[in-house]
Amino acid sequence: MSEEFLTGLITGVLATTIGFGLTMLWDLWKLHREDRRKTTAVLLAIAHELKENLEKVNLPTKLLQNESLLAKLRDLSLTASHLNEGMSSRQIYRDTSSNNTAFGQNMRGRNTTLITEMDELSKGIDGVIVGLAQLSSSSEQRDQQQT
Image (tube, rainbow, N blue to C red; front, top):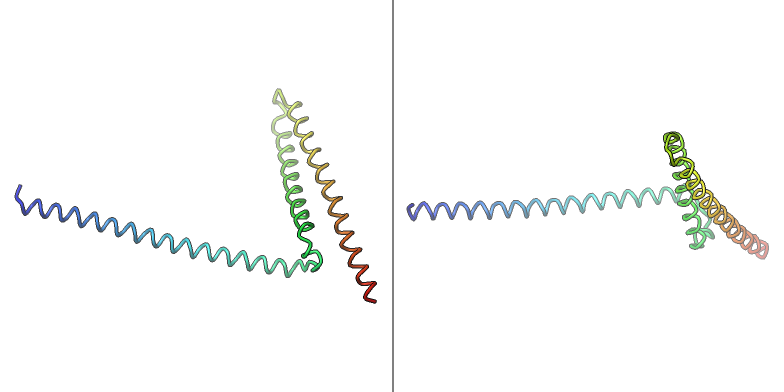
């Protein structure tokens, strides 16, 4: 092999490696830029939806200022959603697994879990009702004092 051939080969391999590396860097930069644009677009859409939803709901200012009560309402919503999914899952299991040898034991276990969750949800609802009643009575007292 001649010296010119080796020089050409090394130069070609080096140029190809540099080109490949620059192409990868360019693609990574484009991907990062595109990902940033998508994230920004999603966040703007979420912010817009939240703003619209708050305008539609029109919650009283007093309720919006009571963060602990709002947190309880959120937790109740999540608990109710989880309970609904559990009941749906139980019904699907009941409809599809009646030939299972451990069917009765599994149903009792599912029923016990659901009843426990229902009791917790009921207690949570009672607590929120008390909190809303206190919020309402404090608003009524303030209105009576102003008149």
